Amino acid sequence: MPDVPDVLDTVTRERLARLIVDQDGPYERTGREIAALFRHAGWPDPVDYDGSYRVPWVDELLASRAGDRNAVERILRRLCDQREYDDPRSATAIREAVNRILNADGLAVAYRDGQNMVIDVTPSAAESAPIAPVELTVDIADFVHDHAMVGLLRSRLDEAATCRENGAYFAAIITVGSLLEGVLHAVVQQREKILAAEGNKGIRTAPTSAPGRGNRDQPNLYSLIDTAHRYGLIKRDAKDFAQVLREYRNFVHPRSQLERNVHPDADLATICWNVAIMTLNDLGASHFPPRGADSHSDGSQSSR
Image (cartoon, rainbow, N blue to C red; front, side):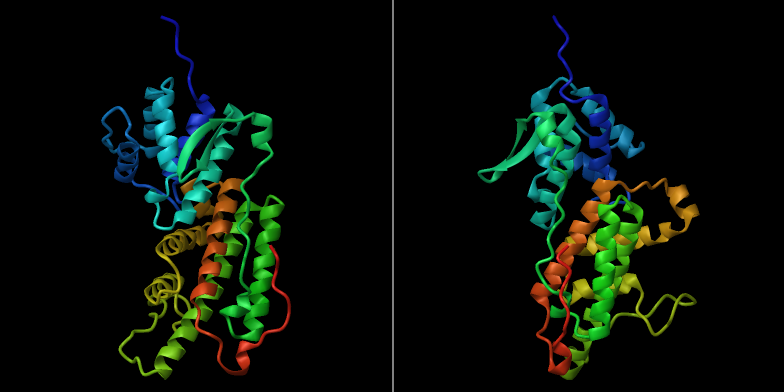
């Protein structure tokens, strides 16, 4: 009986395993969550996490069915299924990342008629389609009412875009984190002023920084993220991403990055950018209308 050729190249399979795990990324999965993903996909073999390193374990799972196109298609479709994510838009970002990985093997996951399907493509055509950055559909001034802060945040937005577009992926992620912190601080303060004015004294404001660290008058990033989600300003996926991004901020110190072995690439930088921009778009949709003179802001919003 002739050998059945592998559906995916070895390198493609390893990259796919890293994406499924997404260690330290916005969509990181625990071992149990990975096992659940494979079960949801209808993987033909029993899947139970054995406690080993996740990426090699996933690679072994994929390798065990290397020549089974039906099994490979099942996990690819489920990985890109919006039911695996709190925000359906996250499935789009993952599908784009998956297709970047599959390009060289002449495969792609397409969303048609309400479902994912694996199709054959010509590698050259597929390789010319990088992950598309999400477009900012709101003006930061729509939900941040301080003129000076709006200008500063727009500058951070442009810096992050410039870094991402020119291959400075780590700098892009750090700058996006800085942008998100500034935006969340502004909108949380605004929301609490409105709640106070309306007499909602029972709602707690964001706690201050951890004892002994930072300015006690400034909420820390963790509390900003949590409070913004509690107030309904950001969705669950945005909250989860922002908490991961908080960890990336520590990698501004080379020793931390070396210890965690983190090496951001174009895909990760664009995914981080996309989720951050989706968060800004969510804020634009959920903000309270500006009040008074502060609601008017001049200057144009970055188009990136």
